[in-house]
Length: 158
Image 1 (spheres, rainbow, N blue to C red):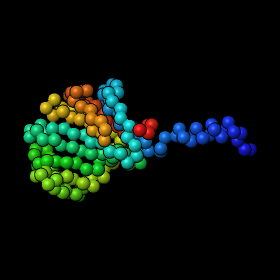
Image 2: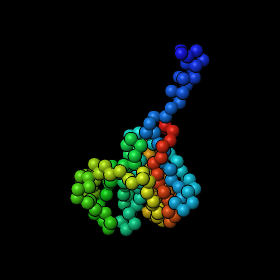
Image 3: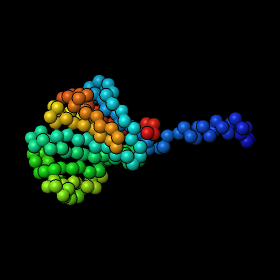
Image 4: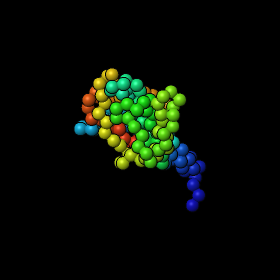
């Protein structure tokens, strides 16, 4: 049975309102209570990084993730030095020079179990941050020393 004019319009609106299959959002919440501290849209293929200042050396370290088909995947890390706690694990990505004495670990391509993990943001000098292409949020300012859950969840397209 053919749709009447109004039915076609409604069907068109329904098609236009459907979000892409792998659109998502990053949700930062308190691990103990579930209280949401921040949400950021993350389209399929888009990335974000968690950055912090090394607690001894003070330089910036970053772990970068990507939304791949609705999954949180660790894709690369930047380590400006072989300082305490920083190292490349052979077989886990490729280590290449950053041209400034540090290195990138590229092609890690490691899915995060459950598309979420717990992080305890450090003191202001460490300043854990979440950065997308157009936003940066200080996790330390939101929840210093608290356990926060960072999760990629299905959501509306950005």
